[in-house]
Length: 184
Image 1: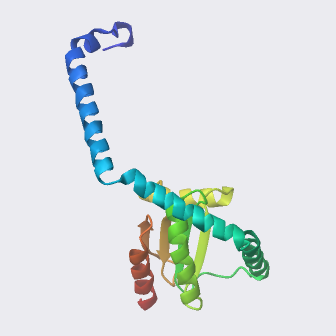
Image 2: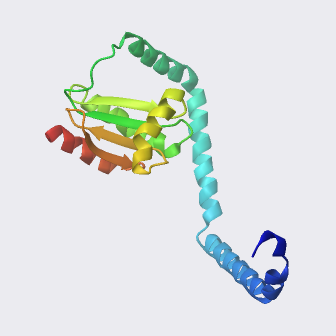
Image 3: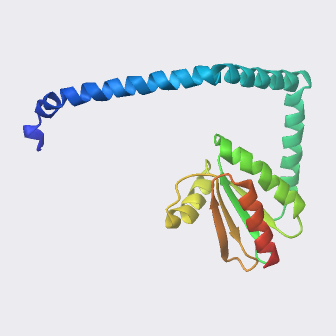
């Protein structure tokens, strides 16, 4: 139907169906609420929030701010002393991430563990996609594969050739990929 001929007729003809669909939606919502009540979903959420509040209070009580500042300051010092070197010669894991991305932070912990565990056998590069260079690199490596989400991890073999990619936070799969490339 062209823009000029667009009118209310199709909606008017389907009012009865629209009404029935609305009723079905409301009935589905009632069932969802009954299930939530039965499963005590809100009570579980309150418990979860209470646990989170306790953790935050502990962080504050133990001066977590200062500890985090010291931790990041040490990391900055290490980076100041780091030299740029060729990545070829050992496998490389590239982690495309962003600070706002919860799955990225989760898999980021695994990436840090892998970096520590294989420090002499594996290059680990973390690329913040929110920076100009990070966003450009993400587009370079993600676009050809139709990837438009993070976390996105790429593993290259020691010659610098693509070994495997991983989209999403899957620690077991990431460990499996890294172990396989190290055996190659």
